[in-house]
Length: 253
Image (cartoon, rainbow, N blue to C red; front, side, top):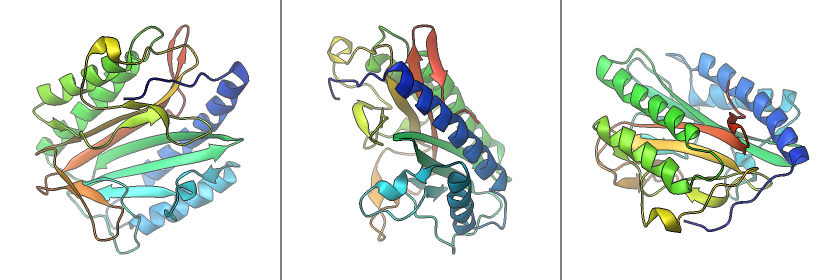
């Protein structure tokens, strides 16, 4: 799970808060742009434009081998979906958009999932993810352990009747897009062996879960990860700083 958590200075946290606020606004604009008839490619183009206007750079383009600013996933897509122009959103789709921004030397990372004219079953599925994220963020407090975040996510997702993804994890974030610690959506090992959360930690808390089984597969493009059984999946993520007064959501849009 990782035993070290990088602590950011007040100056570094201030920069990340500034970058996170800008990314939160980008996320909100992308969320509003996801509509029936719009393509994943259009969402990508908008993200590139908005990140540039904000004075940042796309974090994901700094990942070796990945050439896009966003990951766009539809229905059974879990993560790392390439935002292709031929992916056109239609009624009934569950769409997730993952976006990161590198600003003044630091990354922030955030994701949103939403339904386009979906049925009540899918709406409930999405509500459970939002609930899990909000509850998990509340556990990002000084003296708690990463285990507490994972336990909260798993508990809410399973109580809802769904399955947390086990092959992918949330993570620390800062000068690198992916830093220690790993933050699973499920519990493993003993709580006392899990890293203690210090003041100044910055965590990308991710809720990744499916309506079916946990098994995943990688698409022929080498990036897109989907559920093996074809059941829908969703992703919710915020970058959260841990202060003496509690968790601060840096990417809230």
